[in-house]
Length: 403
Image (cartoon, rainbow, N blue to C red):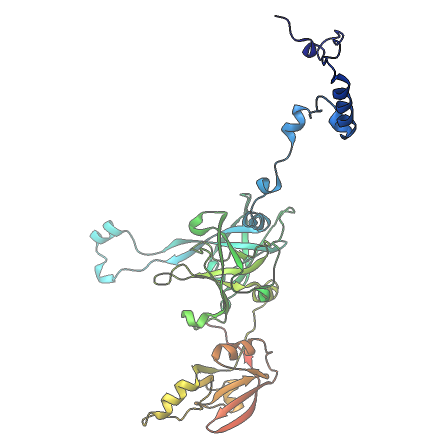
């Protein structure tokens, strides 16, 4: 069967037949076709549209929304090359048996108790400068050997340059390769509750782990978590932090380090983690990298929080030892002998309500002002004693190091 003539004209050189329309309306139809054709854009005159080659279609990029990663992947990708795993070893003396029990049978069963054993630990860290890794002090405390594993798997020996147990921060030096970059550092003072928080590290030895949450709270005082020997206002987050995350970075949505992961709450209330603000960590690291001890000012006071309500309840009690000022502040419970507080004339029962012209509503607020002061320089205090307000000047001394 032969193909219709008007189809064949598209594929071979056979002349087209006469105009197919016939009858009196022939010229009218022709004029309509010409008029419609003249009214169309030039591209519409082509009988067959020009199609792109198949190769061009295959190489076309997918839409941006389809090919882009989310912000968590991008933030983690920016910071993760600077995150390291830290493995430690230290020698621990074995617990000796009671000498009365050291008979030959027990020696055969348990072996010789003399000597020591090797204890292994693990944590995380983040490169903050060429050859310098910032981590927690408790990760590298009293260790004999430090091994640092980079994000690409390379393993390097590390040396603890310095550690500050008061802020739980330490700096480890490594012989860093030239291609190892420092993590971008953010501004922890710019954080707000509800901001994204991303934790990186090696929990339980699982390297390159990323967890997501938010900043749950700011300026969480570490003393309220049961650590009386530390001086920290922490970032609280619900991003999963577990053993092994210690020393690793907490980053924001831009991939900048905003904190150093340090604590996780276990038991009731589990699921909350805490990080040291990077602004504090940066300042401590600058001192530790020189090998010098970090100096913390101290007053020599034991303080408890006091509110106006608690003071009124105390004052109504006929057996109350002291009548307390019915105001919020830091109540002096004890003045240490030979301390700057004793020299300045502070007494038990005094209520500190201001320091350096900043209001003091609780001990944490006073500690913040003390930490911002300088050793040996006068720090003005406003104290309520009985019904009087006193202006005292105290000169903080260096906090004695624990033996």
